[in-house]
Length: 219
Image (cartoon, rainbow, N blue to C red; front, side, top):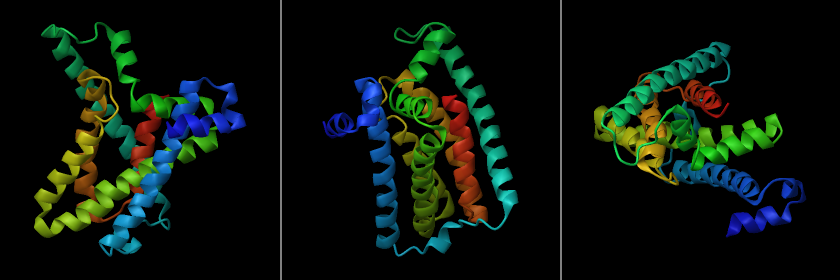
């Protein structure tokens, strides 16, 4: 109820449908609250920003991060295609039929929020909102959780961080088939990003990787 109320008071959003305006407001609020949540966790666990490995001094990290995101997107796509073929080959009762039906299902739920933001808002504003959200995710699941959980062992930290990251993808998705795509992506990205962070302690290229990955999802 909060998002529609806020959307109705913003004149700029009057040109959009109620659902579109609601999605824009919801994603913006989610991104902002997640950043606040990151700050709270950092204070609770007494983690200095330096432990996150946000290094802007090396431009090569930007390139590496972008290429990593594109590569992960390619691998995730292969796994998603395999999952679709398996569902269709076993003729699961509620599984979508045909590529168009799968694409429609995959672009629902919270993914639709991101698509609406990117398609409807000015590019710099849209990407700023998305980048805030993805920065918060990488900070929590890689920067904070891995730093905190490594006290219990590296493998436990990677497994737990990745598992929580995968579970989060199912929220606000209409069915297991809709959630299947982001969850597969979370397996690929979660494992690779976690291993890289544990080894190099650099968060910035992982944020850029996540951003480039998501650009390919929504375009």
